[in-house]
Image (cartoon, rainbow, N blue to C red; front, side, top):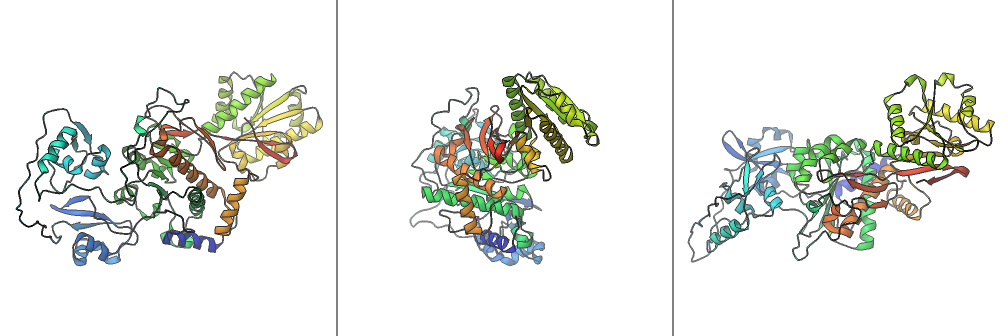
Length: 585
């Protein structure tokens, strides 16, 4: 697809201004300044650690923290080069201009007695490096001030690394609340840091009936959520818009555009203002840690992204602690993170899943036809790991097979050998174990010649997923040989919904959607449908549930209680006669 500068400029502008054909209910990353709950000790003095977000100014920061611009500049010499988003600045706590407390007439200050914790086994929590007192209070659904009181934390509530905290129970909280009655000057109940989604308290979201295909050995109670609020979906991608249109990441722009079309479609059908979008440029933050402490992810019901495994890994622990589903949208190498992170969702199927489907197809066909598959591989590679894996997997499935290996320079006349190894009375299942485009092209040419020499020869060919990206392979051979491929993605361009999406994408962006745009649409529409159907507890319902999207099949499976979800859905395509591509089971 030829990319025009105009398209990139449009997308960069949309991201910068937070607008895309007036999407209903969209909630973009705010640039308002919120006082940080993080405090650090620098040379014996407490400082606020404030993460600068795009659009914030020294003036707005100084007003929020009630200090002068000069004071901030004095404590942060690097600001002489300008204020940059994603940087951490330090603001002295003691320099804040004190405000006199407002005391109602006729009252006098009276300290409230704080209850001492009884000697019993309170639940304990070890503070993580990214947590503050408010994060922990939210995790256990307890008041932050009661949490500070039972642990004898001062007003600053500064936590040390891996500090063990007692979690107050209902009895302690009740006693603490009683101690505050009549105390007009006691510290008000600490509020959670503000988030951009409004909470409602009159509705409860429950898990409901568990699907029949969910194993009874897997505990799904961790996915239950008790509070309904606006559904904030965070899209976390490396747009790189700060570097200008010429350096913007075009593939991520396409993903973003596709997801926006999905969001607009959903709102057009539902008209539900509870659904909010939070668009975050990963490149605005120097590290995942700075992203977490900035607070832009707080309150998310689902996070789509980051793209790469190196960024997903450190974020997965935070997502688990906060019970937020984290969707890996594009990187197949990230599938191992689902082994130990129960809120991790690996959207692209792993290579092992694709190959297992191929082996199953060969085994089923061999059993049905009563034939011995012919496995062909390149001679110079010997029995490489890929070849050994293929042969072992076929043997495990009870398949008896024949093998043929030859070098590409020995290809002349190999078609005669192939004919001798095949049976004109049966369908000849043939499996080519190679990702070399040159060798695969030679095998296809020889199979074509073998079939041409014997019109009664019927061949059913199985290949590897990488074949789909080959450029010089003769397409007519794939159809002639009834080629089967198991893929992560495949689009049926004749489907009415696909045609509608392409038309809508062209209308808004004056170009055709590519694979990234389709992926963005698929993931966004899937997440919206889950929230709409099941609410915040949707992970408890989807184990083994199958869905067909524009370019992907979805069947998330959870291996055990400690694992997340991996996608076992595969697109199986068959190049059949008359240039028709259809699915195979």
